[in-house]
Image 1 (spheres, rainbow, N blue to C red):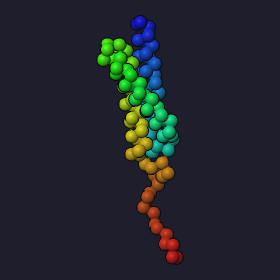
Image 2 (image 1 turned 180 degrees about the horizontal axis):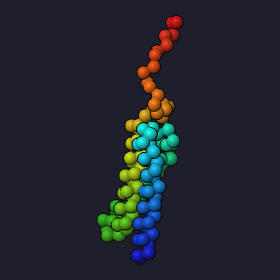
Image 3 (image 1 turned 30 degrees about the horizontal axis):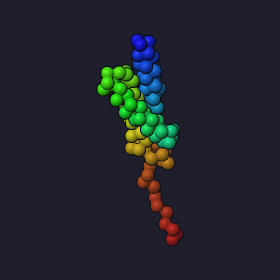
Image 4 (image 1 turned 30 degrees about the vertical axis):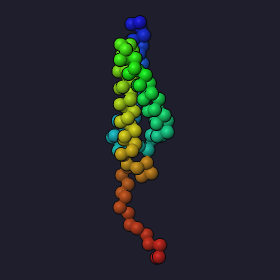
Length: 107
């Protein structure tokens, strides 16, 4: 049983840590060009469903480590999705000004 708890803590920690470089890169560059929202959304939904299940188990006194590590992963993925929505729009590279001269169609 202790071995399974250690595996869960290590596995959950590694999964959460693996997202940190992506989050830091998006924050530092203030752009989310490199982030594809489709698989990230699927990961969020899957993590959320596992979170419901792990909360159910944790309330029964079982799999508390699953709940903790999954909560951390859910927070990291939520932060990354938030960056995608509130960062510089994906079709506009960082450093490009949006205040460009408008071209008249009549000229």
